[in-house]
Amino acid sequence: MFSVVVPVYRNEKMLPAVVERLKDMNKLLGGEVEAVFVVDGSPDNSYNVLRQILPASGLTSELVCLSRNFGSFAAIRQGLAVAQGPFFAVMAADLQEPSDLIVEFFRMLSGGSVDVTVGVRTGRSDPLLSSVSSRLFWWAYRKLIQPEVPQGGVDVFGCNAAVRDALLQLGESNSSLVGLLFWLGFRRENVPYERLPRAHGSSGWTFRRKVRYLFDSAFSFTDLPITALLSVGVFGIVGSVGLALFVLTMKLVGAISVPGYTPIVLVQMFTLGVTMFGLGIVGSYVWRTFENSKGRPLYVPLSRESYRKDRS
Image (cartoon, rainbow, N blue to C red):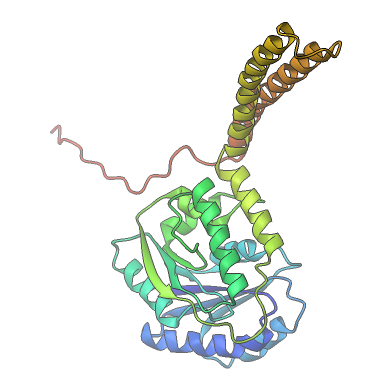
């Protein structure tokens, strides 16, 4: 069975078209599609619309309604937990990804040569400001956090049961589902596609959410903030020594005549550098404690085979 997880938030007008697209996929995939809709506390009439159209659609389907808006990643995780599989794909309810992309995901996954398929945008039909901000966001994400994430970021992906199970074991909050997916590894393949224009509504992927997502990912997958703090501390100490020599030289040649100026500047610079360096060291220990508190496994085996010598 091919399970398609669709998180829903403010997509009331798009849902009939989403169901029609899933019906088309179902025909292409031999009637083996399972549609899993997760209404993420949507304030519109999305849940009732799905309750009306799903029973008559002829699709094998699941409809889950969350108690409030927990975010798209939480909705996707819930959908993956409910889906029967053994192959899974995530599909956005705004229909900005072509339907053949999801079909290609399932074709590759069922072939057994890959465990994860990732949709990689080669172009987009978004408004200029949205396109520029999104490109800038994903550039910073790749540069600072996870270089293996493709250019343009990840909106949709597919995986097999092994990846799904491993992903659901990582029950971290304030983290990134995409980040966890890439952290797990497995055999991964990118599938290029061109993003389609949005038919209704506007994206909920606001600048504020992008900034929060970037910070959540930075604190979850890299020690960059601690490294930056340590670097500032080291730079401050080295800078204070250099400034001390300069100020002392100026004092000796009589260029500084203000009483107490020299020791005040030296003490402040050196104290600031030592403080930042000390915070960096303490932060390094806190980071390691935080890493252990996540409960991530030390490794994720892809497969295991045993070959034993016959002793008889």
